[in-house]
Amino acid sequence: MSTAGLVVVGAGLAGVRAVEGARRSGFTGPVTLLGTETDAPYDRPPLSKAFLTESAALKYLRTAESLRGELDVDLRLGETATAVDPATRTVTVGAEELPYAGLVIATGSTARLLPGMHGPAGVHTLRSHADALALRSAVRPGSRVVVIGAGFIGSEFACSALHVGAHVTVLEAADVPLVRAVGPAMGEALGGLRGRHGIDVRCGAVVEAVMGEDTVEAVRLADGQVLPADVVLVGVGAAPVTEWLRGSGLTIEDGVVCDATLNAGAPGVYAAGDVARWHNPTFDRSMRLEHWTSAAEQGAVAGRNAVGTGEPVTCDVVPYFWSDWVTDRIQFVGVPESDEVVTVAGSAETGDLLALYRTGDRVTGALGVNQRRAVLRLRLMIGQHAGWQEAVELARSTTVRSS
Image 1 (cartoon, rainbow, N blue to C red):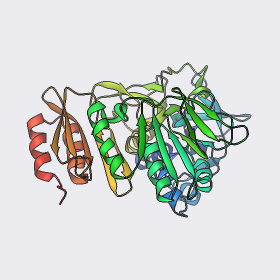
Image 2 (cartoon, one colour):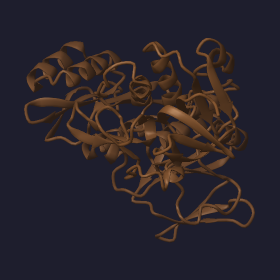
Image 3 (cartoon, rainbow, N blue to C red):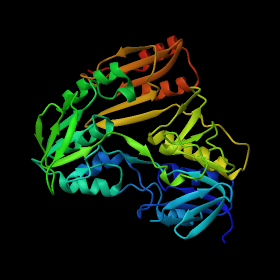
Image 4 (cartoon, rainbow, N blue to C red):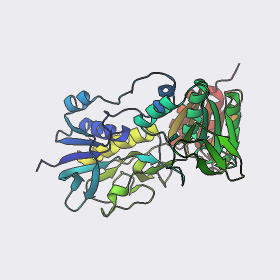
């Protein structure tokens, strides 16, 4: 049996950052990184953007050579962990019981599908390199594309499909899109940005069935309307990959439940990225985030804490995500739940929106369209528990206004 060291399950962003965090903290013991895909760890955000419209290659987070050479990692691609036993400190991989001193669970999430969506060819999700390749091959000029779900992935894909000349319709079951991400007021405001880019979004549209024998032919709505379709993308959220943890004794509640240090309730076991539900000290609440930045930040903390090179540190994160719609960048920091949302400048239609979210006398969120500098400065202020008036004054002084 090999010497126990750090085992990281999941070779995405959080897993790679966990390896880097462990090495950066001074850990010199053995590190094993397991990934179910055969590709070296790659960046996922471009998959719904430039990758679909250009013949772009994957953007690797680190090459296999870099992981094995520079970081001295036992990189195992195409291998899947099926169980973990905190009592014996082992991870099951095939027929092998892999020992660990520290474990980071970074298995990410998988795309959700609606009932009845497993039938005809032409129904896609978008989470992996293989998904993006299939969509890039399927979408052509003149293709009739239906996107189910008007979230950020669906909107980015819609922009990309329009760019290649497809006819795109986006269906959203809710009356207002993006409510979970930015709240109802700003979700409605961003509708103006969709209109600016010619995205046809139909809210209150409940999908009843996908029609077609071998290949998708149409989408039928609950009101009886039928939309012809050559390609259907289902973008209705993601579920954390936790099935393999059944029987482990770890608490699973829409993710692996962790404390403020990302410890999963067992000695040496930590979680990071989409799969982690942890207590975020910045907002004093439990959260599970599916954002690039938080996965990177959590991974670094989990890797450091898992190898025990110092006292465990807490993972204080101000949520941050961005989305690119053609030439416009949307950014959000903080949390959308608030007492009040105030538009400080601009609008979505003019492409210079900046809105602040107030909870009590604190700024707890900010949404910007093409307001990169202001939003990033506001992220720092939210992390510092800045007062509302101070944030408003900073926002007004750093706002970019459309000419």
